[in-house]
Image (tube, rainbow, N blue to C red; front, side, top):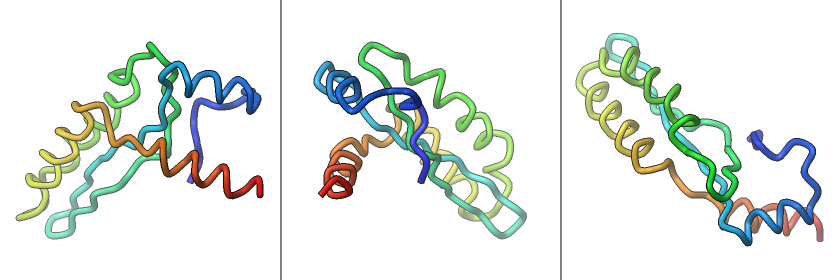
Length: 106
C-alpha cells in the first residue's frame, strides 16, 4: 500500500512529525453496482500535526455519497459506515505503519 504525504521527508523529519502528533490514516469509500457493493480502504495518508484531515477525506466521502448507496442491501449500510469513519477522521493506522517500517529496517 502506498503512503501519501511522506515524499521527500527524511527518517528524522518523519520521526519529529510523529512525535509532534502526526499520524498515518486510512479512509474508506464505497462503490456499488446493483447487487455488488465494495467497501474499499484508501492508500495510507500521513497527516502532519495540525494538518486538516477533512481535506483528505472529502473526496472519499463524495465518492461514497455518489456511488455507494446504490447496491442493496449493503450499499446504504457501507456508505453510512464509510462516511462515519471519514467524518471521525479516518482509521488511525500509525502503530501498524511504524511497526512495519521498523521491521523493514532490521
